[in-house]
Image (tube, rainbow, N blue to C red):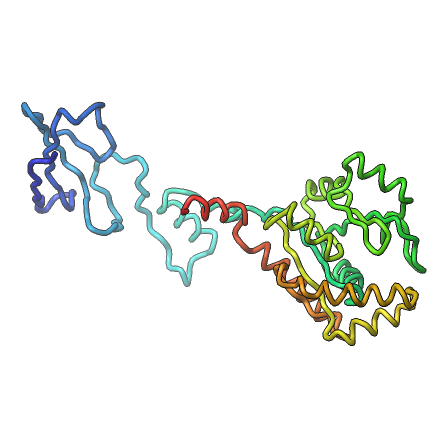
Length: 312
């Protein structure tokens, strides 16, 4: 235990404040020699040490105490800010501060994101994704594998990888799919290889899945992905879009509408909801792009989760 604490000021010296501290020798296990620690006197039971510049708050000074600190800034004249050449001013500031200004980014580039876009049938997910592809660089839209037949205008390898049910089952057995499901009688799945390849190149990944697939991906990816739910402005607008597609029989149309009604109930499980209103596709695409920007500006989720866990 400390027996006494003496305070004294040294008048008119380069040491602004000095404190005398009595420390028992028995408590000293190793030589203690920081740069600002100066042994002064050793007695039978204690030795006296002086600490330089111990003040309640940090202070700045244009000169140092002559203690031989090699890190102290050099005292150089700084030209007038409003008249000096910029490069000359920068050099003078660097010299005075004792280090050069770095041009490296203050924060590392954000890691690639996985963006999961989902929603019921008839809300225009494909239209949003197509426009997003045109409006934003640095995204890779993973092409989903499916066993369903091609619709008019669809291109194999661009819209989907169209495979037979047997080929799809082989992909499942080889563990080539991140997620797969049976949807309206046909299989759909997300190939892992595309994700690995393009994330390795620094691309953000966009996955377009149905609501069932999004639930599976939430279990797999947790908070490491961003989940966006796209909806129409009303149930009537959603049904009209399904009817206008003219790709369904009346039986399958009833199934899709009933399923869509149930899927809308799951929107609370998503991070964001985007309304894709008729005639306002650009607004929906802009909102999705803004969500991506906001997520990339966040602190890394994994780091935040680690901090939260440590605080518990």
